Length: 177
Image (cartoon, rainbow, N blue to C red; front, side, top):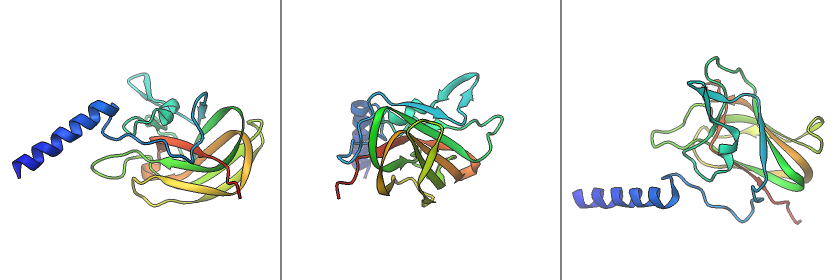
């Protein structure tokens, strides 16, 4: 039994060394590349005066890093994070990766959402809304149609502890059908 535990520990350390994190994601074939993305968020948590849980963390491939809404003072729901694309892009869906933890669901895990798209960052159209299970699995939404967008906003209307957070966010390639 001790050898098995030692082997598992060694594999986790090796995986952490190779990926920079025990919790890393793979790029899925249905995802739009994240190059050139910028962000806007309703708030960003500041730790000792330094914003560490910033929006750009949602595209680093590391489920240990994340964006989180302001904790002190607590920003109230709803929270949002907007992906600003470098050019107009056809989008067919959205993928949300909650923060990972060996101990379970973390503060800010989204359970009720709305997703909006916009060409100008001012006028938004609702592309989808719904609820997600309160767990740490990736959540994938396929829109009922493809949208031409430069801005895609996840609005968190309910979440663990009333906060907003995301480990990773991805936009999905348009449906060809």
